[in-house]
Image 1 (cartoon, rainbow, N blue to C red):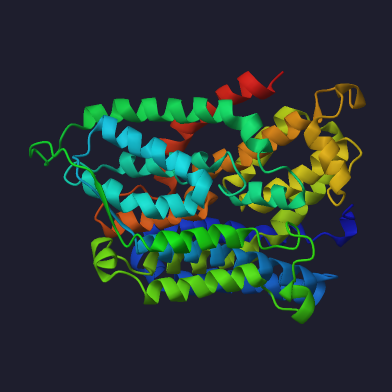
Image 2 (image 1 turned 180 degrees about the vertical axis):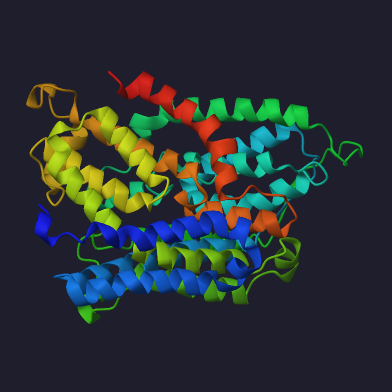
Length: 448
């Protein structure tokens, strides 16, 4: 249990709030300044928090080391999937229209569970934009972010980082699929139906040419081998394979064999990439650069926020209902990294039933569903279902909810799409479209 006198001061969340405000308003109010200086701003605010933890917080250095490990693991996965998928050129010999787009979005949702939301997003965003050339609107990209970059990856630990952390802690690989498949299908179906209405109204735009009826061709298919290596590397962890060596323990390095393999794949995939595929995808490192700099600031500045949230979850878990776990996990996952948010509330839910997240046997009992008489409430597995669903789905609420959101936005901007800024994305799209759907999920599955 985290003791209150060991918590950081509340004012230390100010750098995180400032960074969020800058991300929201910078591109809108002072675009040129932000584009030139966002790396310095993100890193500078992160240094403020890091310095405080290093100088004034007991065990602060260890917390910073753990955050560095998490960031390197995050950027290793994101960068390897970004570079590898950038070397795969998918050419679809069809004109973009509602039915074709809906099929592509659903395919991306399924694929997200196999190669992660980042992999599916980077693989499909460019062909998706190409087939809609001349009729591409901002909502096309926003719905792609909703479905492929977030909600799609809600069925397997490979799909989204919080589910993978749960798997590392002992949640069975197919548990989420068995619990969330129906809400997943219902949510994806509702969003695609809304998309079909908007896409039908969009018309043909400036693309009035005849329908092309052809197949799908792939250039750079050898990169699928790299994709398979990345997915296999995800599981090279001592928590998954008993006795697997840990570079962190052996040499006190801030990364393990998994990250080493992924960074090696980045170099190998870029060096051996098919130049035709890179040119066809208009590949460059700017989307990855933006994610790398902004998220190092986010990872650092959110440390005190996550600590305070974690302490609150631990001390108030007994009074938390399933509804409160659902909404708090979801809303915080939209503005914080959803992986540690998931872990904090997972630990809190276990504590509600007198269980510990450090105990594999406790986790097994929890996911199997403790009898409701333990708490006089509902079965324990419903709590984890709510936390799992909310941590993944609500990542679509903002651009910073999940790393692929920023990358897709950047790629679309480079293609000339008039993308909504941070605030417009929320009030024009995610709040009016997603919140009612998430409210409906709550009413159907968690309210009672």
